[in-house]
Image (cartoon, rainbow, N blue to C red; front, side, top):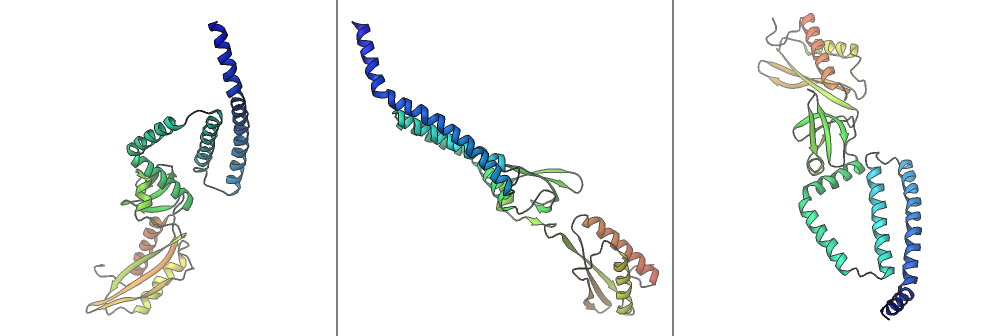
Length: 262
């Protein structure tokens, strides 16, 4: 008798819920298949749009995971599973995780913004957080900068997205400013001639934008000459020292002495 009652209840349950379970299984299988096709399409589309390679896997994974979660939730509703307790549990876990990982999530969001907006690229020279160097890698949570004295600096992305960043190589060139002081007895035209000769011979000095050579200030005991010349941004420091050395040698060789020259 009890066995018969069990079979009757099972038969009734199958008749009542069987169609919805079958529909749910079909929707789940078709949904996963469509998500797989969409994943391939997104991957191809992002490649064609030249989205940053560091960001592509994350965006693809985020989209696929979100779609799968929505699919599972939809199937649960089709089958008739109550979502109230499940939703409350997910909400509580989400709040706790958000509080615990607030700093990490901020770095994560900042990393996504940096990779999308591209205020700097790998290989650029930047000044940030008191550090100057070359960007070696841009990760989702942090950026790696290699300083000129070969130190590896890891900067959280939230610091880069919320504070000032100086991209000193973003335009491709930088201006070198050299100021020199001469006594009133030295002819400025001679100084200008020597400086122009040095810059004409220097292959590292760019012709465009045009250089500037002029008197920046006049003082009782002499005058100051300002030289503005444009250089390639990469290798700027080495080129700066090279040009300054040649200027000093040329001035000394021409007899146009700077104060303190013997």
